[in-house]
Length: 90
Image (cartoon, rainbow, N blue to C red):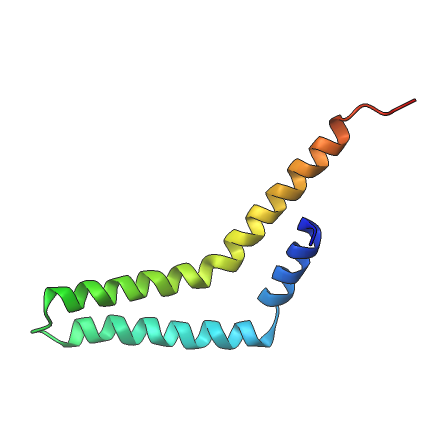
């Protein structure tokens, strides 16, 4: 699969209704995890750290398509620059 095709697939994902559903559910889960930390005064430190880690992982997952899109755009630009710098055979 070419970088351009991958970029198109990522764009399709970002614009899909399914991704919107995933985003909505993950935001609700992040909020619920944060609220459980705030509302449980006697929570063990290990449990707090576990919940913080789950919030971080969820946030990273939600940002993944955007970061992947940026990487693919960079790959396409580098590939284009390589093609433009090659001498023409005449």
